[in-house]
Image 1 (cartoon, helix red, strand yellow):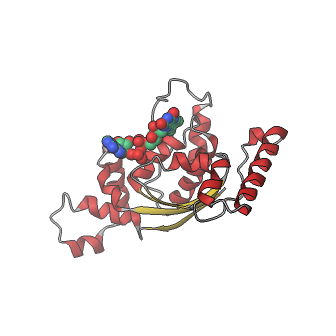
Image 2: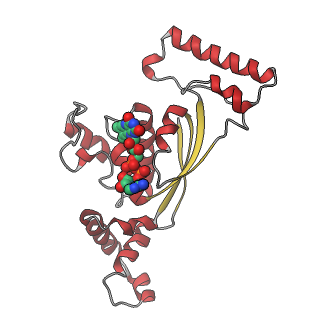
Image 3: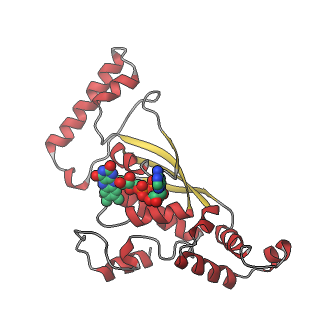
Length: 222
Ligand SMILES: Cc1cc2nc3c(=O)[nH]c(=O)nc-3n(C[C@H](O)[C@H](O)[C@H](O)COP(=O)(O)OP(=O)(O)OC[C@H]3O[C@@H](n4cnc5c(N)ncnc54)[C@H](O)[C@@H]3O)c2cc1C
């Protein structure tokens, strides 16, 4: 899997803090823009995030390029309706490569079946079958690439669901890497981003069983 934060709103934290600030101050815009301090930015973000005034952080967007994930993973990604996506088309480009879950790395029958699927797909193309039809033979393991954009509010929601240890391993790894990179450019917005157990009790009916301190330390040091 490869994940890259390609682009993001310049000075995302200052921008969101300014958006929050104009709601309550009588200060003139130019003065406000020039005089806002780091401390004020952090205080404002802390206040809006903890009070749930989250529309303010919708002003900052983050775009990621992700490759070598399975269609099983991308199918879960695209369920997030407030994000924007562009995905490699298997109608127009040849499908190649598979993602193998760690649990199947030495399962001969799995690897042989993937190999057979790829060979059958190649054969169908050779026979002149269109890519859009030949792809029906391919399993969910087929590799894909996707470009996605989310605003910070949607990212917080996404990390809450997908960084959870109960989420499927591949989307969890993808989300965790996205969080790691987003944290570098907006550490305050994403300070406590991650599964719900970072800030409260686990809401799952069947908890993951991992020690909560271990999870909190992991995300703190990400
Ligand atoms: C562990 C796990 C297991 C899952 N298992 C399944 C499964 O078995 N089957 C399955 O089908 N899906 C499953 N899902 C997917 C899940 O149901 C959601 O589709 C997915 O997580 C996207 O979440 P969302 O709808 O909250 O987020 P987004 O689509 O990212 O939306 C963000 C938020 O915006 C609001 N919103 C967005 N659209 C609407 C709308 N139309 N109306 C009202 N409010 C809206 C909601 O508050 C929503 O939480 C699973 C997800 C997880 C994390």
